[in-house]
Amino acid sequence: MSDLADLEPKLLWNYFLGLSRIPRGSKNETAAMAWVVDQAIAAGCEVERDAVGNALLRKKAAPGREDRPAIALQAHVDMVCEKNEGTPHDFAKDPIAVYRDGDRVRARGTTLGADNGIGVAAALAALAAKDVRHPALEVLVTIDEETGLTGANGLQPGWLRARRLLNLDSEEEGELTIGCAGGVDSTATRRVTRVAPGAGRKALRLKVSGLKGGHSGIDIGAGRGNAVRLLAEVLEAVVLRHDLQLASVRGGNKRNAIAREASAIVLVDPAREAALAADVARLAGEWRAALGALDPNLAVGLEPAQPEAVLSAADARAVVGLLLAGPHGVEAMSPDIAGLVQTSTNMGIVETHADRVEVNFLTRSAIDASKRALAARIAAVAALAGFEVSGSNGYPGWKPEPRSELVKLVDGVHEELFGKRMIVKAIHAGLECGLIGEKYPGMEMASIGPSMWDVHTPDEQVSIPSVQSFWRFLVGILERA
Image (cartoon, rainbow, N blue to C red):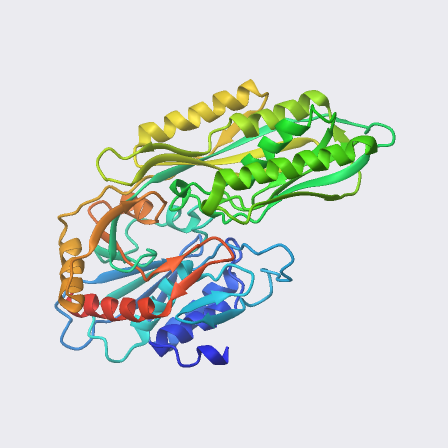
């Protein structure tokens, strides 16, 4: 990490690099949270933990700021664990291989964890800095944001004393987020029957790869390909034409990431292998042309595989049918905010087990009625394909309050420091503010962050100059709060 030693602000980057050495995939944050607590204690903070594993770090007001109301900072310690195929990285034990690429910081072949490691590092830096004249400061660090908002969902009313909360989980410099979508998960499950493959058949892996993927909320409207859906399109075109038997379908790794890779094990009569390969090559070209610059590196190909027992013909038709017909992508745009997706679904994961196939959908909407209606449609489509659907209770959205005193403060500080007002917006993604606001009615909230791109993918990167501006901005807010 020698090329990172001169990054500014040093305090923030040192915390981020320290955190990057500790595995912290969702539901594996114990060591990382212990490290956060140790840093807070070293900075002279009072520390509390709750039953679900969140940490609340408190620091007294700087001299002369004792009369000001407290303010809370909030970030989540976990990260999405995605890597490129062939990258020898074990997220359970290996540090993230962070490196500098010009004016950006990236990771080698994996997600970087700037989402939300930069937020945690900034909050720790605010606690440890000797020259920040802040009021009484609370830092809420939550667990398991990425796979279920577990930490925010388990947060107890009354724990926070502050009535103003600044979330540090936004991803665009100069933008002030004041609202977000709610979400609900649906998992469709079909019990399947296994049969012996036809005599003399050859097993092949039909693979879709090379897609950009991305955040299932922020990037859902970008038109990028979903590997699970594309795999289903190819299977629909070749299974009957080449009398294929289907053994398994797998794709996607995270419910909240657009699937970048997917594959199916198929068994083919060797006499038809060449014709199948020709069709797959033709379909790959058609889909590359269709996606164009949105996903130029799409690859669809065949490779040898180990033979498996296959799904019955009825099960194979039902699985491919659901992957073709199940909702994915933008359902509705906001009628009030130009360019904002209002309702969408991400077909995030398909898994084949010995006795069942499961397909996960994550539905988001700023409108609870729309969210429920789309989840009901997923259940109806799944039922037609012989799948049973189970779902979570979901999580609430965050209603924008553009005239709150906190929003005025944050926007005013930005104009003072940088000479321009912020872009005030709501986003089509889940932020913990929705759940926090539900448990703390009347809490004034806003969300800021530096510029980062391609989060939830191995192309994740964060702007170094933007982190510098973010730190200056955060200090400015705390000193004027």
